[in-house]
Image (cartoon, rainbow, N blue to C red; front, side, top):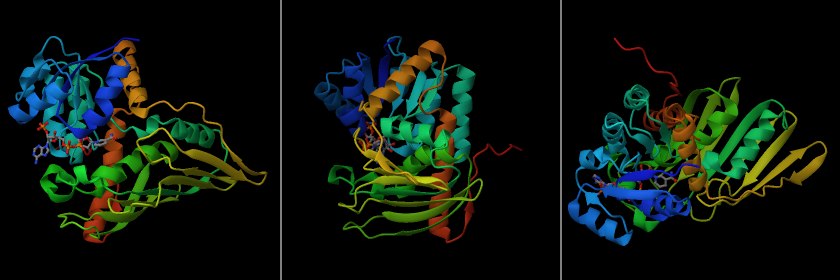
Length: 339
Ligand code: NDP
């Protein structure tokens, strides 16, 4: 498998804690890092043994020793930085949410298509062996026609991340763009087309947040399948999970909406209840990076394509608007014709 030489756009926490270690385990190289501040970039480069740093993203993405760019800045900057990388002819792995709005997100897809580069969105959960197994058995008809999905994704935001996510709406703060978008990246491949959403959001945490920090939503997918989500930054002990209930059975997955390759999947039907064997416990970020490198080499699809990322964003934006307006909001998963 080809390894890649990466430019990191954003000296971020997720790059430090997840992506740089995963890249190095796979033998990929990190050619350089860019940050909005020279000082931050310099310290980050030193701490993570990255040979080059700059505060000029255009210089980083133009370097000959950069094959691909990983964009992990605040959400607002995913759009311009992805366009810069595509214009320089570099493959792009962009963090979620892909953008702050759908026109920008589709423009990112088109820019990467025109440049002939791979464009992937770093939703790690679809790469988990648990979720791959859930997709497989659902497609095989294990529970028959799906009726409802419940997503349990209310967690405690770590103190070190309680910054722009809570306090800076212009940066792309809030639970829908941070957590609901992950739910959608998991549920969309299970159920197909999301139709509409209602939601309620509140501010219940011990901070003076500028946005709702806990949201429950109900979505309708095609075929009148209902999806319920509980997404929050405020809940320390709930644990996470995903349930798919069909006419012939139920899939009950526990502890599967996390960054660790853990969790159980139980199938319950008329014959009883059994836990599925999931031997593959590989790091999800490694799986995503491996699929990305394969997509570059073989022109295959990455684990989560740009279009998958846009459709996950469409759900998150509908939930966000439903919570703020109190209305039922359609989910728009196709590009709106221009002019
Ligand atoms: P950080 O809090 O580490 O911030 C990321 C970068 O954003 C910083 O390094 C800085 O960039 C820039 N930044 C921070 N505040 C501001 C500001 N006020 N104005 C301009 N730039 C700012 O974020 P995370 O690592 O937690 O998240 C980064 C991205 O990754 C987000 O899009 C998030 O949604 C996503 N993410 C994905 C995860 C996954 O599992 N897929 C997990 C966690 C996050 P600079 O380096 O340029 O100074």
